[in-house]
Image (cartoon, rainbow, N blue to C red; front, side, top):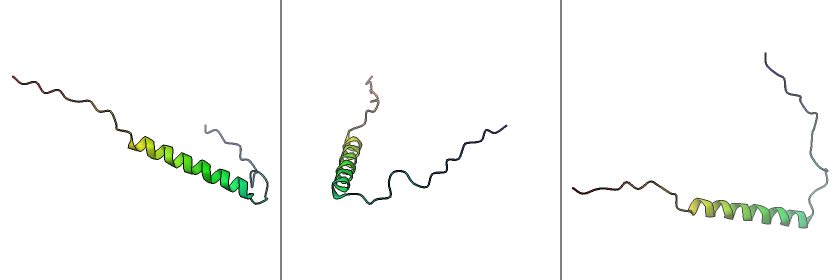
Length: 56
């Protein structure tokens, strides 16, 4: 038998007032830092298993 999820009757989270300029700047800085750290992680060299060739 399938369990049902309770559906929340929520139209919005937080207040309906627009963001202040300081809040907008804080969000902008947060996303810039997040993007930079993601970029740095993607530039990091990946570890691979090196195959050792033996000469006979």
